[in-house]
Image 1 (cartoon, rainbow over the protein chains, first blue to last red):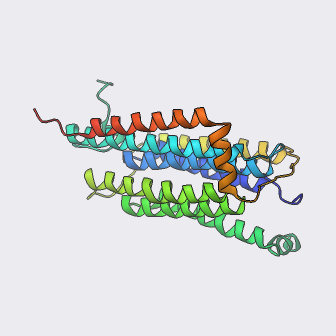
Image 2: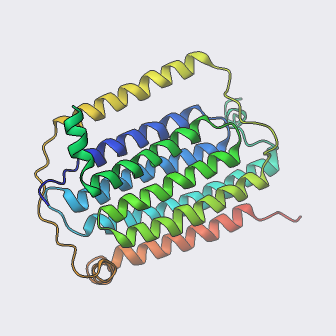
Image 3: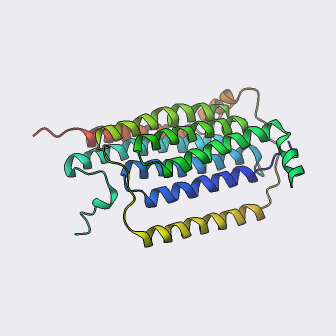
Length: 104
Length: 174
């Protein structure tokens, strides 16, 4: 197992993280922004699982850590969608650039 | 260079990694470039499934299964419900702010450059991984012995989050 190196997985995680960052900061629809944040969380999860197998001190702890991250992300998505639906009901919009009531 | 490529592709694990990574990046790129929100969520589900395949390659079968259940199942469906309950008839259009987008592109590419440089220069000596006989059983033993308090805290947090989500999204009848 010495030929398996962690570098390709880390590079893939970096690519996915950057795509998610771009989507989260450039998209207009709030649901797509939430989805991009999920992509960034997934990229970090990939790093955790990769280090759990091929890190300096590999053990199953990385996989357990990624399980905790997945459940936190699920809770975050549920609350985010609930807030979004509430906001749409009150303001009639789901665009992030119209959510500027604290700016006025 | 091509000899390296042929040698890289002669290994089955590398081929599988290449295909899954291609699907993951392709799904993410399509998510960015599609204009309809439902198509975006579908592309994203594709990326989630490819990441589950990568987890199987990394000998994390249980995490792969949880990834399929939570992300490709629950999160995608929740996003589609969110799209249904908000306005979805108009196409997703980029906000008209060219300077912002240019700066954002430069910043993202710069961040990726820094990360890539750091990753290429880091030296991780791979240790020996002992996956055990049964990945799920080993994870269960660890969770219910060593990590039982974080696990219980997680259950409390999930309960609080879901009750909060229901109360937030509930229609006020006054």
